[in-house]
Image (cartoon, rainbow, N blue to C red; front, side, top):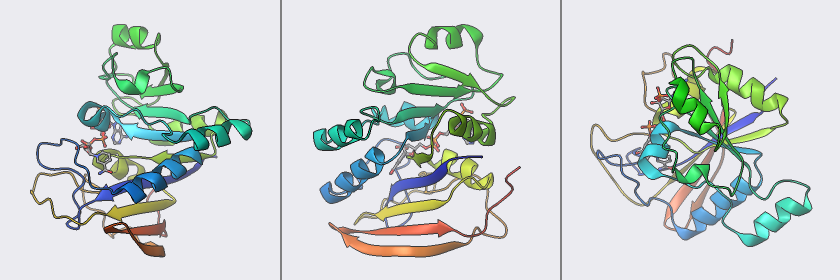
Length: 226
Ligand SMILES: NC(=O)c1ccc[n+]([C@@H]2O[C@H](COP(=O)([O-])OP(=O)(O)OC[C@H]3O[C@@H](n4cnc5c(N)ncnc54)[C@H](OP(=O)(O)O)[C@@H]3O)[C@@H](O)[C@H]2O)c1
């Protein structure tokens, strides 16, 4: 068994989620950031790849006081669990995502440096799945076992690819901001190799939001799920 998994990502009209320097770019508008905060509040866990942690140093907490109160009233922790996918345990110990605002789980693989893992255990729960890369199927099974039923994935491009490849994604929200970023090496909504045949999606909804467009998709054809 695994949780319901959805990706939320902000993209330029040309499909880029950052530029060639991989620095964080503000693609969303205020209205969209409020929507993202609501999705976070409704989720049990927020997942990101180590590439996003190193590039953006996100906190991944619920920003709105009212939404945090709402979670507590529901008997939930103030913030969802944060999950970092980090095979080699590269996460810096001073990363914002390791602050005390929420529980953080770092998923590593067997190649992770043992002494780094030991130090990290003082700041986060560390779980090990997979030989050289994090086994995402095993990680999702584990999250389900500890009570996580809804996972929001907030990037980046490589983690999105890995999850889609394993057939682990149920829905995708793409917010298209009013910009073109360009750059052949800039990360896109999904990097990695092409899917052949392409993964089929069904459009759930489309709406104008702020100066951009929000699209919501259901994943129809899944890849392997072991
Ligand atoms: N616009 C947006 O909404 C948005 C959101 C998030 C991020 N971003 C941008 O996206 C960029 C970061 O994306 P990214 O692709 O470089 O990094 P990423 O997807 O955040 O992290 C990818 C890393 O996760 C690790 N990983 C471990 N097991 C994996 C598995 N089974 N499958 C896939 N990945 C696995 C790999 O590193 P190890 O091998 O070391 O474990 C991999 O390189 C940044 O530029 C950031 O600003 C944009």
